[in-house]
Image (cartoon, rainbow, N blue to C red):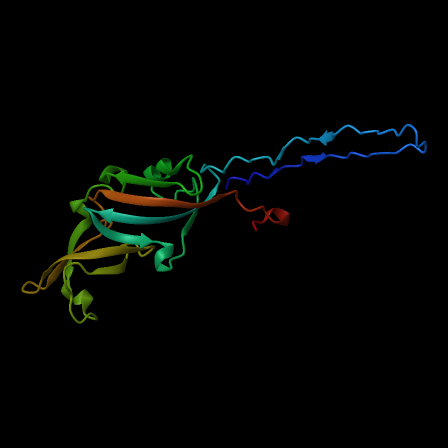
Length: 208
C-alpha cells in the first residue's frame, strides 16, 4: 500500500500597523511596523515503497480460471469467496504461475496463460486402467465424467480418479488418474489483494 502524502500549508502572514501618537500636540509621530511574513516549508510525509511479491512473502489473491474459454473455477469477493492466501516460493501454486506473480504489488491485475507443459502436463495413457464395475457397487448410476477419491495401490495416499468409460456389457469401467486439468491450457485472471511479510515467530523457536 502506498503511504499517504500529508501536505500542510503553514504559511501565516501577519500584517500589523500601529499608529502611535506622540504626547506632544505640536508634532504627532506615526510609527508603522513593517509587515512580517512567516513562511514555513511544506511538510511531506515519507512515502514507503509498496511490498512486492517475492520469496517468503504471504500473498493473497483472487482469480478466475478458464480452459478453452469456459470458466472452470472462480475465487472472487463478488461471490463471497475468501481470497486464496499462500506463501510465495512454498510450491503451493504452479511454478509458472508463481513466476508470473513475481514482483507484482497489491492491487495489480494480470492475465496468465499456461500451456499444458507449464501446468499439469499432457495426459498419460498409462494412467488409465480398467477396473471391475462392481467396485462402484455403492453408486446408483456410474457415468463417464464422474470423479472419485480412491486409495493408491500401496494404500499410502488418496488420489482423484475420473471415469472416462463405462462398459456395462463387459462389466468394467475405465478410470483415469491423470489430473482433471491435464492436457489443458489454463487461462488465469489474477488480482493481487495483499502482500505482506511472514508473521513473526513465537518464542522457543515455534511459529506464530
